[in-house]
Length: 92
Image 1 (cartoon, rainbow, N blue to C red):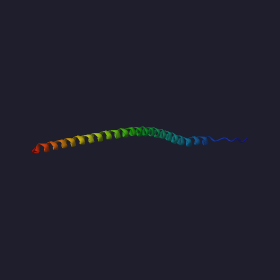
Image 2 (tube, rainbow, N blue to C red):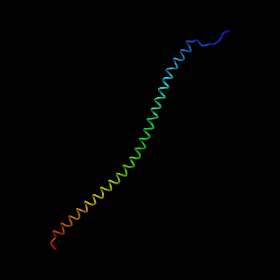
Image 3 (cartoon, rainbow, N blue to C red):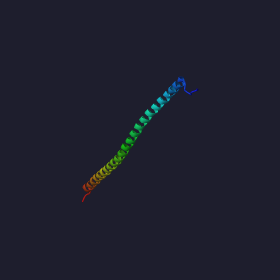
Image 4 (cartoon, rainbow, N blue to C red):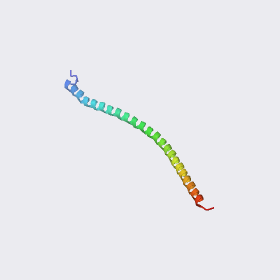
């Protein structure tokens, strides 16, 4: 009557060898969860950056328009001053 049973020490050694593996898998699961959170955060930051770049483009257009308008006003002032000086200095 020979029955094939595992010795107690063999089953005990299997449980101890699976413990580091289980710890490793648990650590990997934790790291994957952290990676998932960081990936979601990165995606959110990318969306924010895309919106901000659009807004910055609109601001650049606005400021460029303001600069061109200001330059035009100053050039008109300079032109008007030079014309008035020429009219005042010409003997007619």
